[in-house]
Image 1 (tube, rainbow, N blue to C red):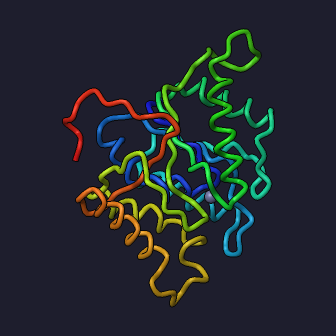
Image 2 (image 1 turned 60 degrees about the vertical axis):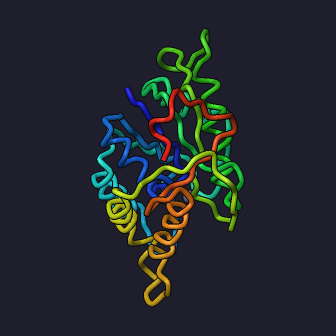
Length: 229
Ligand SMILES: [Zn+2]
């Protein structure tokens, strides 16, 4: 049983988009899982073995309760009925309250397919009289994290303060050496420093050191003001 399930097109997207949120959720005692839809391979400096090892290292830093890979095709991910069935089965088995998936505008077709799959699987997961495994389950909400291959500046639904978690988020991302270090020697600013600057900009927008933006198609509900920064 999970509180939060993050749907990621590729291993590393969950870390990039919401590594800080994951660490915060875990510290608050929530159960958090990540389902990577594809292996992320091929890439210029990666291999299946390398990516699996890097993902395991990052998973340990984040302290995830569950991490799975659906083994769908990288670079040609499609929101097929079979893929929807697989993901709806994960929802019914892990029963999360909240689903997180990528932002719905992106240049990367895998990310767009992941959004469609994550939302369609939520609908299917609640169906009765179906041949899906497990019992019907309807996650309460879908949120979208920011891991986008476009220079978009979109006002988020909210920004989460991740100031105490930035160093560990950075360490989790740095596990993916084949993606963010190999072949980038001498890049200034480095990819990771760019990410830090971005996290600092989101933090600045809410008056904290570091932040992560989140998006929602539906309005957010609040029960009180205690957590507003
Ligand atoms: Zn990705």
